[in-house]
Image (cartoon, rainbow, N blue to C red; front, side):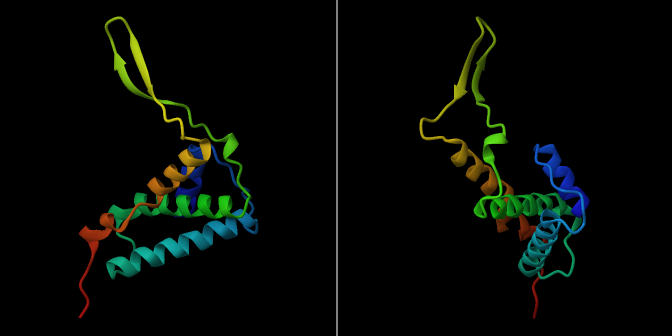
Length: 131
């Protein structure tokens, strides 16, 4: 899962140190264990099902970014939060951007973290009853 997490981080424009003893690598391994245990506890399974793999990767990335931000070790200024088109009209070309006066880069980053961390609704299909 570590390589998938690194690929996901890279796809988001976030690079980490590639050395196994680096602080980022240690933190990533901890986040992987934390998310794995959380999913296993919620589903009562001993392994993460294949159908939850991508969700687990996103949850690890979310946990990693949240931890880095909380420690003051992540600069969100380098992340791209360009405006998203809310409406596009073809005739006479009209584009309206989804803007919010209170939407700071930090608020956008926090919303992104929440998206990555998912919720337990994704686990319902895989939950097993224990007696």
